[in-house]
Structure formats: structure tokens, C-alpha cells
Amino acid sequence: MVGFAGPVTGTVASLALHGAYEMTKGQDPSTQAAIAPLFLGMACVGYFYNLITLIPILDLEGGWIAPAIAPQAWLLGLFGSAYCLVDRFNLVLLCVVAFAIPRFILLLRARAPRTDTACTTQQRVIVAVLYFFLVIGLAMISSKTFEVMPGLVPAAMGD
Image 1 (cartoon, rainbow, N blue to C red):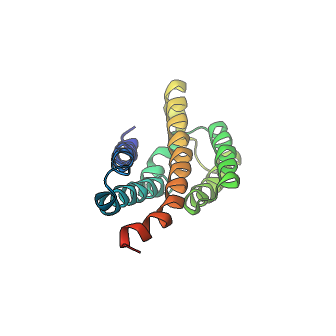
Image 2: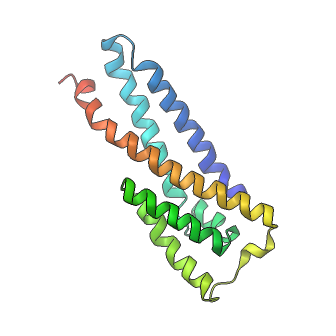
């Protein structure tokens, strides 16, 4: 559960920045052009950064969270992530899926130890749901935010 501290806190901070953007985008055009894109840009960077930290490799938070996820949850999460990739491409989500597939295959072939059995069933469900909710949610909102950014740059630059 400690592995969730960084990504959850970072996501909350990014959502607060996104909220600040939504509150300032309708203000005076001279002020809005300078401030609002800054808030959205910082939120966009935060979304992508937190998604990167959830890649299931050791030394990232995803690497500490991944061992607590059961193989069945990996299967469902990979299907959900693949559906999200087909709907709206996100390179970081592709990295999450690319690193999760070998972990899933090793768990199926019983070549990787199942460390999720040290957790209770309730803990495994909570970890799996929170992990894939964060991954898919961050992928969707970061892609959507990233698509809005190019339209704001000319206005902020005075073009």
C-alpha cells in the first residue's frame, strides 16, 4: 500500500491543477492567456509522470505494487488497458502493458513466484482495482489533456 502513496498524491495534485485551469480559463483574456495554460501544462506533466511511475518494473512504484496483484486481476487489467489503448493511444500506457505482459506470462507458467498469496483476498482486490483504476484513468485523462495543449500554446504565446 505504501507504493500507492506517490501516484495517488501526484494524481490528486494534478487534478487540483486541472481544476485551477478550469477555474481560470474563463477569466479576462489577457490574464487567461498567460495563466490557464500553465496550470493545464503542469497537470498534464503530472498525469504522465504518475503514469510512468506505475510501470510494473522494480524501483518504480508499479514494481512494488505489482507483486500483490493476482494473475486473474492481471488478465482483466490487461484487457482493460488494451481496450483503452485501442480507444485512445498513449505511449506510456503501451509501456505499462508491454512490461505487464511478461509478468503475467511468467505467473501463468509458474516460473515467477506468486507473492500475492501473502495478502488476503480483500487486500489483493483493493490493490488490483486501485492499480488498474489509476493506470487506465491516468492514461485517459493524460491523453485528453495532451490533445488540448497544442490549441492553447498559440494563445499563450500571443500568436
